[in-house]
Length: 295
Image 1 (tube, helix red, strand yellow):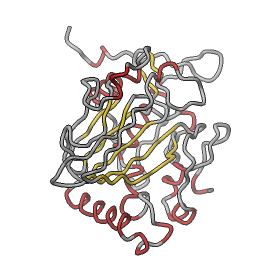
Image 2 (cartoon, helix red, strand yellow; image 1 turned 135 degrees about the horizontal axis):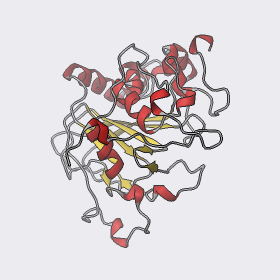
Image 3 (cartoon, one colour; image 1 turned 135 degrees about the vertical axis):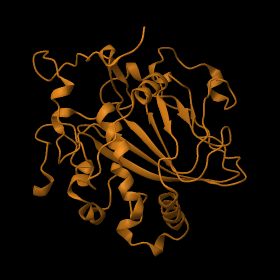
Image 4 (cartoon, helix red, strand yellow; image 1 turned 180 degrees about the horizontal axis):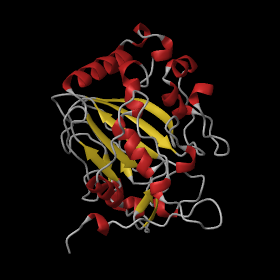
């Protein structure tokens, strides 16, 4: 059967009160980011890949000049942090700040994380709750499988994945920006594809990084990856002799939930555009649709 627009039926999503349906067409999810750029919604293929696999890679998102700028700041942050003003001394600082609400990131979070009742054209319907710089060189051999089985996590855990036909909710969701090329099997993040929906306990072979259970990827510099923290994943030994790994790992979550003990520097937060600041608003649901112009 050929797929048409009519094939993709609306999901039935239970709203807050009395089992009423939340119609996606009547929601007001944010359509521009804090720089005024139109939000880029994930394609049907990207949504399908993420839902079925638990992770999706979008190669070559950043331009060559953007990659150069981000990479230079990343190495400065790693090798000479004292040369950076204290409030900018993080992977949320300098030119990297604009990646926090990149149009692709906002579009993805609107689809898989945002709560429509806490979103508007001035306020994101999700939060950003961590941002860290990853640097790996030859000899770094981290391997530590964790997470998985997200369908059956209790509320409060954050590492869950919920879905109904036509709609999915990812809970704690990871965003990775790669600033150097990654070669497949030479140190990229490892995934047990689809383990976010697994119902069985992982086998002992999960502890072998060479097991066929593990999937990974290759990508050029400037690529963007999303994965649900409900998937079983791990870092791996970096063996690429041509370049090291330099990446940003950030986490996003629902407005009423927080897993990480992290907040941006207050001065950095104050310097952000008003809409971007809503990524870091207090963690609660009631009365948390804010007008950023009012603080």
